[in-house]
Each structure stands twice: as structure tokens, then as C-alpha cells.
Image 1 (cartoon, rainbow, N blue to C red):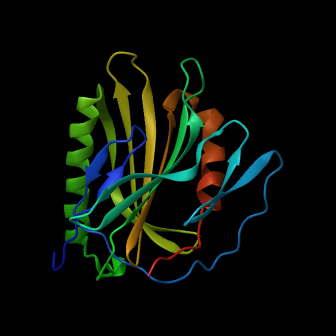
Image 2: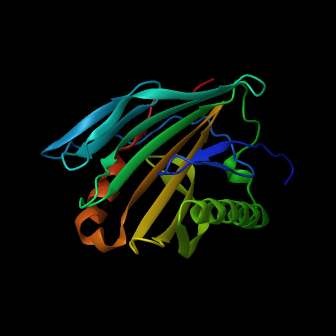
Amino acid sequence: MKKLITFSIFCFFLLVLPAHSIASESSAQTLSLPALKTGWSRVNIENVGSIDLPQTIPVLEKTPKNLSINKSQNLTVQQFRAGQVGRGEKFASVVLVTEIFGKQLDFNIHELTKLDIAELDMGFKHQQQQHAVRRGYKINKWQQLSIEKVNGISCIHINYTMQHLDDNFTLNYHQYVFPINDRTHTLSLSYRLSDSGYWKDDFVDILNSFTIINHGR
């Protein structure tokens, strides 16, 4: 690739996953918010925007938590979490991580070639496989990385399923990386595959409700 930048990606189990290269996009969000569904709450996320959540997915950390500051790279990381996490529950997780690099990301997501996307896909897959093994999981099915738009904002979409080797349940995992100006917003959504009928429609609505107001600098 012509230009590379290294950054951390946190998945639902709060592991750091270094990626290859991410493109910057400064265009504002253009689509209007959907109507708030009955029984849902619109949660404002400090320094980011908002997301809609059903009552079945409680907020665990409403105010973004400063996880770490790497002074050598001028990197600040913040996190928002919601979900069902107890044993016996219909597990679901919504995690948003914002990484602020302190400098403008200087290339565009729309300039990624098929070769760039294939290289990104290999990098993400390799790192996710390594961390899955360390946490007692194995990846069963990997969908090739794709470039998509959510509410008018371009993002990198990763989707795979992984099986817990001890408890034998399988998670369906989606990650959306939004590179904008001097930061990336990474939204990770996951639930047990056996509970797809319960969560799938809600998670589509959660994703489509996500808004980014703060575009950095």
C-alpha cells in the first residue's frame, strides 16, 4: 500500500487488535436518524454521537472510559459498552471504541484497491485468529472484509463466527471501523449464534441508529 497507519482495534472481549491501514473520511453524516422504537432508549455518547438500544441491552459504561494514553504516539483510547454478559443470559455485546491519534489520517477509504482490501483482510483475520485462540475460541467462518456505508459514513466491515472451546457456544461477531479525520470509531456487535432469532433484527436497528457527530479535526 502507498501509505500505512497502525492503530488498535478492541473487540467485544476488550483485546487490542493491530490492523494494517485505514482510510480517512471527513464527510458529514447525511442521513436522518430513524424514529426511536417503542421501549428503546437513545443513548448519547460523549465526544462521538448516539446509538439506540433496546431495554434488553443495558448500558454498562455510559460515559466513555479513557482506557490508555500512549504519549509516544499521542494516542488516546475511549470506550463505551453495553450488553448482556451474565451466564444463562442471551449474551449480547455492543462496544464502541474511539481512538484519537492526534494527527490527520492522510489517505482516503475510497482509494483502497482490491489488492489493498485483500491485504487488510489477511491482516485482520490473522490477528483475530491469534487472539481468539488465546481466549479459548476458534474462528469457524470468516467473511471477507468489505467496505460499506452506515448512515452515510464509509467503514470497514468485518464479520465472522467463533466457537468457545470449553463451553461450546458460537458467537456471531460484526465489527465496523469508521476512519474519520484524526480518529477511528470502532463499533463491535456480537451475540450467540443460537440466539440469532432473538437478536438479529435488533442488531440491524442498533447499527442503523448509530450516529457520529464529532468528526474530530
